[in-house]
Length: 264
Image: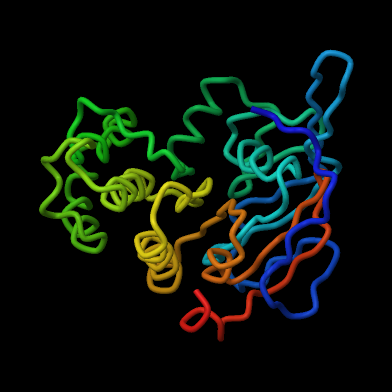
């Protein structure tokens, strides 16, 4: 549900180097996603909510970015537009040099399935499927189940869910469900993982474990992760943060990596 634009000052970002006012990626990897001049407005009766205002950014391979900001700042809208779940009113999202503004619904669905992985606050697992079936579902839809089953063995070990693959979601803890959700997001080897408050329904210890999994995947395997979070402590696991307010990037920088082990 859309919320009214905030009237209070935005939360403080984690300690960072001197930020710029425009988004330039810091990784040396290739550009995975570029957003050019994104604008998105919602009409609620006579009221117009400007969720994104001429926002541009680049995300490179191997980056872990935390998108922060108060309620109504445009965080979730940005994630949905980057994930091709919503269409901007103006501007364009380009994924691995693939322009998306001229794609039809079927092409957008295929691109989203093959290039993007999603991790949600509420896990969004199908209750009548076990963990293995939930993880393999995107690959089965893509016609890649056989290759995915070969990847799953190693992936399940890395995520610590090898002994939970035949359990249904209600038989799993919150942390185990989120690990299953991460495995599902990764099973098609996406170019970009989009995580929407991935620790929001977890206790603090379990949340840290999930964040360490994402951080470790970025460092060891070159995952590219964009995470929406309201929590500065969670943001410190990322390498870079962007602060949104009123649909614009108003601050950004590199998180203080010295705080990872001591302050989170």
